[in-house]
Length: 66
Image (cartoon, rainbow, N blue to C red):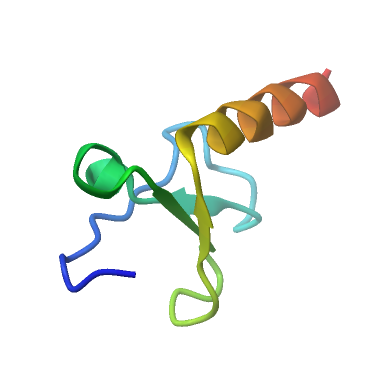
């Protein structure tokens, strides 16, 4: 992906016992991608989403949460 360090963070709403994802948005402007990983497995696989795919994932999660 890149050698640039990723700055991972979880939502401030993430207080659900560890079932969270983390994102690193610092690559959006330089590489046009948003890395996403499972917070329980920080050394595991990373999904690399486009900004459009990230937007759709958030829309889906909000609908599923209702």
